Image (cartoon, rainbow over all chains, first blue to last red; front, side):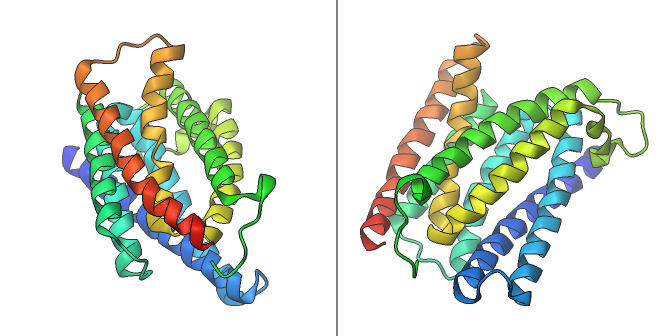
Length: 114
Length: 135
């Protein structure tokens, strides 16, 4: 069961991160072409599907584990999303932003450990 | 970032604040709802679908949809690498509201963690302020 839970946590994180990236892409696209554009709608729908999967997995995990156990993983999503935004969306990642993000992640992990 | 920054209620930073309030609200609703419907013996329980039996979960879903619209609006103006770390201020607000409202204990280690998050947020907020000048 623990192995299965680990897989569920990974899928939950992956769908969440991917969903956020799709959302940002969709909003960038809507800024250029507007909301009627087929491409924008497709990207936004993909984001919503991913977030829905992530939502139900989160619910299933919440029924099994304490929120405080799941929180460090949520903390990890901060660093993953910031890095993915830099790599995939080509957002500018400054040292300041990186250090701030690392501190927030460390803080979230500490909060959940205590 | 091609558009001018809308002011007043449409201000993306104000909307980011609203997004944060929504997240704190639905996190508490989800946990309460999930706990009350937890029945791990059911085959499909790992999908979380059994949570739908709770009205609190449905209320949470309404808040989530509202929050999603606000969040998409925020993303239109603020880079994901700044907006997302800032939005995690909820990781401080949730334990603090538990301490204030539910009178839960917060250990010294937990206060340290909350402190780290606040320092990190302050550091991330600086590039955000620079972004504001550019907008």
